[in-house]
Image 1 (cartoon, rainbow, N blue to C red):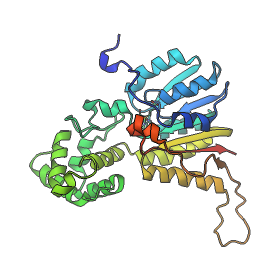
Image 2: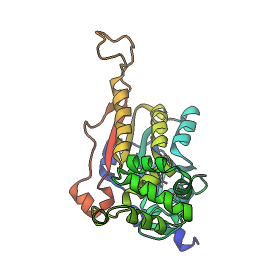
Image 3: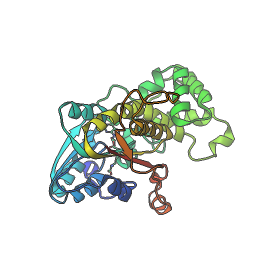
Image 4: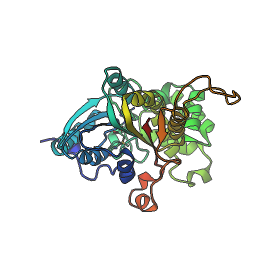
Length: 318
Ligand SMILES: C[S@@+](CC[C@H](N)C(=O)[O-])C[C@H]1O[C@@H](n2cnc3c(N)ncnc32)[C@H](O)[C@@H]1O
């Protein structure tokens, strides 16, 4: 019997845009599905159902705590299933290089509810815990190193770029001052420093004053944008002709990376726009399955507020 903290819980993570993902990926029996962000296996369960007893699911996650969720999934999936632990950018590249091919690939980016809701992981500004934020607890870099060792300038850039934090400079300087006295060790210490660094009215503005800094640190600690940039070409390479790729992002920087990647492969030709005829000869390699990103409905957001910023983009390999 697993200790209760490791017991999978039915309410742990609600898959976002679930019906839309199912529609875009149109999984058919006999196919190979790759879920690059397995989490609690919510999407994987829906997609495995479409396989109807024949096919394969390859699940990937860099967080080892998904294992009990995967074991539960495997017992119920009714199809062959494997869990590969690691960063999807690395695992997808290895699979592609080894000739493994897929018919449908899903990336549901960011953190899971289980990661945020387990205070000891240090993702949440709402609970006091060690400053950690690593999705892979064996990774070298944690939020503690970033906060204590990165220069004030680097911190400012991280807060501004990944968190769109207006008071990025003030917060970075306040962190630098405070860590000279005593290094940061816990999330509550960082929350206090952020609150003290921003003007009083901003402390009561939109959402929690530490929300944007915590998001920015999490993106930096886990190199989330770098992993996505590397994963997309590997995922594309893995797809069979007519294979489908779907990506759910929660941040405009992620969405921009996905949009640009899909647009480039849709266009094919890389000749400068002022060339009268194409000389590169490149053909389109992807076709977008919807012009605009797909957003959750108001009903979905009401039922699951974490879906609010989700955007789904999907494309088929031509
Ligand atoms: C939003 S959750 C996915 C939830 C899942 N779709 C479900 O329905 O339960 C994101 C998951 O992806 C994992 N993850 C995020 N970035 C990753 C990466 N670069 N490589 C591997 N796993 C990653 C996280 O550890 C987390 O478990």
